[in-house]
Length: 277
Image (tube, rainbow, N blue to C red):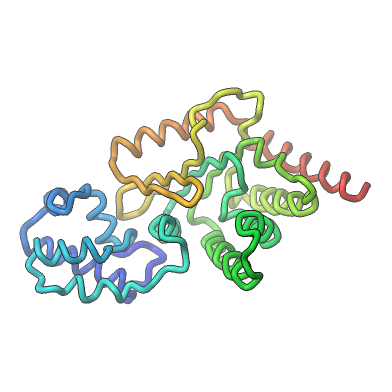
């Protein structure tokens, strides 16, 4: 069964369904096929659910293992080229299918919560010589991701923001005030849960960087770790469980939601006051 937001007639959904049929016809478990493909059984489950793409390399191997006469290699290209960077393609597609997303943001407002002005400033900082048309495309793609929040209840989005995220304003105080007010509105609508990890918490469980956890209706959970121009999408159950514990420790050390909201709105008001002054 494809993910909740995935068009059942899309090439990726159809290819995943065909993979399940071919695997079952071969009387092979997800774990058994994963072992031959040098991936986990969870990874196979994600491909069958349409949560993860079947790469050209895996498609060729699948044809050889299941005896599908080149079917997957021929149809793999029909999944289409993603508008996201290669290291983020699978994570972005999984994000669109998730029932729950839990994210720790150590430096930046999470992409799903960014405003147009914030995203534009961020991309300009990272691509100082890029033409404006390229920046426009990056911003549009970033805002498209936030469309998942148009649904009033799903996915559940729970973010832990490091206090650094709130304080990194520089000369763009009005822009940061705007995005903080945007977050506050979503919190007050009870659409998202946000906690702030204050400086006073000291050392914490995710000093190494950002963390995103995603859970699904019909596929195993995933963890995503992102660095500068790199990303890892992890599905090993023990590894995901370990990162889930990391996130639980972060929420335990963060301010409770009502105090986090008060701090977010207070910082936004301070920025607006400084700007007007």
